[in-house]
Length: 99
Image (cartoon, rainbow, N blue to C red):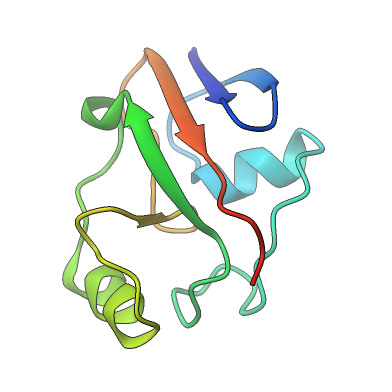
């Protein structure tokens, strides 16, 4: 099991590996905007990873391109719909304010 913690929301929950951060958030009652339904077509589900990036899937070109297209630095942000939890550990995130 992995632990997901949103530092700026004071929310924490446990999840199994294999799901995206977005799916796990929605299953655990975290209000997470996702205008495109989690299809890597918008940037509304962006998060910043404070720690635990080693437990997440690597960032692919589609994710980088989407972030860049909406003016977000791919080196600073991840799309929650594209972050698959692949390892067990503690992942600490921040969710930026909705635009």
